[in-house]
Length: 144
Image (spheres, rainbow, N blue to C red):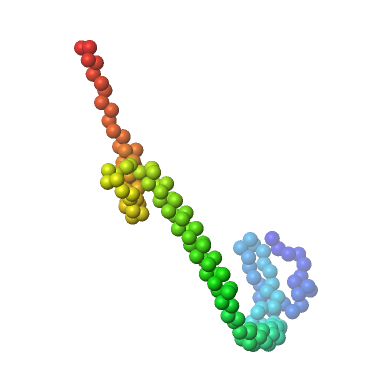
């Protein structure tokens, strides 16, 4: 595909460089970036650097205000309450897990560690049963 109009008429500052595209058409490179005719970039950063510097000084002048002892006590008691709730939820979950595990003959409650170990062994055992189901033996007729 070729253009029927003259680039020089529309782009008089054309330096003569033509870019050939893979689609078969060409386009002039009007003003290359490295050309002396290319305008220098406008420097807006000096203003923003000054304003940033002023903001930084304001931030430095602000000191961190230490919370009052009452606020610290309130925060600590709220954190303690959250931790108590978390541990209570965890203990309830262990109790539920103990109810689905096979009973041990020891008569005592399993520790958290023992509960997790037992659960792991029980799951492995159930997975093995699913993988290799036991073979059923057919009953013989006793009337023979």
